[in-house]
Amino acid sequence: MQNSSKAKQASIMAMTAALYAIFFFLSYSVTLPNFTLLYLPSILLGVFPVWFGWSGLVGSMVGGFIGGAFVEGLGFLGVFEAVVALLIFMLNWVFMPKMAAENGKSRNLLALVVVYALSLCVGTGYILWQYTVLPQLFTGTQALAVFVPTFALNLPIVLITCPILLKTISPRLRNWGVYSGNLWEWRRRNGN
Image: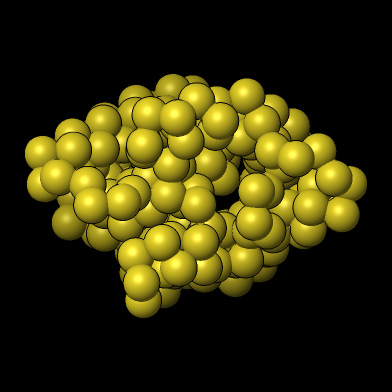
């Protein structure tokens, strides 16, 4: 976002945090005790990086904490969900191809699919590993058994929804001056 105002950044943070928390709440319908199998916020983490940049990251982390603390009932340990948001968001923001799915090139779409699969795998793997340590919701074997269906449930949702959202909404956000682009586009625009 070029020279965006503090009010605009705060609004984006608040909006992304609220959407993330709402998606987290909706995800809780498919759950194990204190663990959400259906992770709808991954849709947001697939588009927010290029739409909102740093403001979207902060909002996503706040929304992740709210989801972990209040929806999953983990209290302060909801910070682990904020770490998941950070991991997935940053992997997507750094490795997404320029113009992502917008230009319709199959090479960009294939790269986008690989990035989404990688970031979702890392995020899911991290949170399951974390929950084998503290608060030890799973054993290592249970975590591995939960990983496969969790990843298999969420990957098609991300791979179908995110490219469609990017292709349809990104051009409008560009026109409104809200679009951030991937990390490299953002850095170039901001002279970093």
